[in-house]
Length: 243
Image (tube, rainbow, N blue to C red; front, side):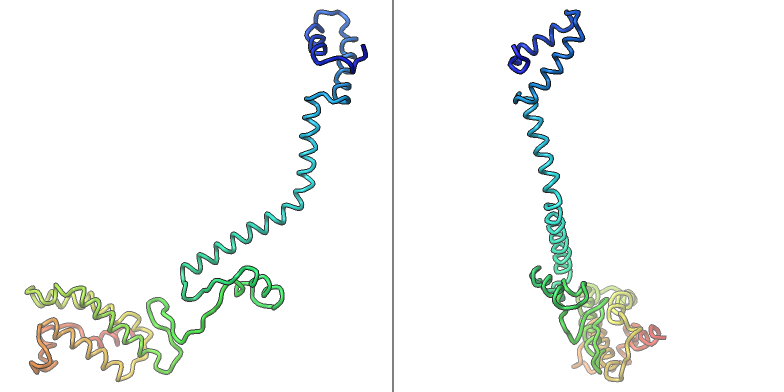
């Protein structure tokens, strides 16, 4: 019987009995011939190895084609994630743009790559670091109005303190430490006019009257009110902060 006609059962039996026969050199040659015949004439195990090798070669050949697609997908996901984080952080400044429009605009029109991912909104004013930034002539007027509004908000949060029967010296300390800093935040950069200073003074006088529980109908002079409250004058505080 020829070597390639042998079945796997006979081949395995020959391997098991190889140690019992003294013709070791001849059996080794037959073993080599059997391995060659199994690989050549389609035995199951070497065929599986051939299939694995073929698949690996195909995968290696396809990898250069899949790599750009993989890189493009990762780049798209990363850019969309960054843009989404920007948009969630400041939605009033950034508006979503389609990815294909960004790529087309970037390839057809020369522009800054950073500007490709967002749209800039043109505004006349912007709140930056707690202050309203404007380029108009009266650029501090809205900031003063905003500071007065926030001052009244801080005063309203302490509405249970100021009308209470606690000593006036404690009310004065609370006002100087909790309300005035809110009204004078950023005063180092202000350019005040007489009109703006008057607005600040009027707001402070109104808070002092609310602190004492009096109104304009009582017709009490401002000097008398100041002697009762003994709070720090806001114009004096602004001048100290500026200089």
